[in-house]
Amino acid sequence: MNLQSEIEYFTELPLLDKARLVAVVVHELAVEARGTYGPTLEQIQDGARLRFVNELVCRLARFLEQLLADDTSRPADDIIIRMLLAERADKAAERLVRTAYRRAIHGFDRYDTTVAIDN
Image (tube, rainbow, N blue to C red; front, side, top):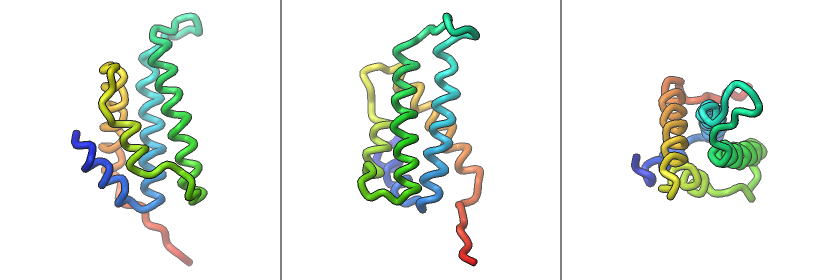
């Protein structure tokens, strides 16, 4: 995965498509986090990774809100993509994020570009 091309791709997306993609990434991260726990509350198998995913989801949800509100203080697009796709010392966490991101991109590509029609 080429980090710079992913940054360029995301940066070139229209605002609504950026929001859609971030929402899909959040969903896919939550799906990946399911592998960190069992069927009961006592069966958390990887608390550190669950916390890691929760922190990413929290940051992405805030970014999504800022994006939709057109908040100019939001993080730059490249910061968000680097936060997701930069290499990590924890290779299992890196694989988790990249797997979620790949599924998000593939699911996102199946849809036509969002079109906003002014009435």
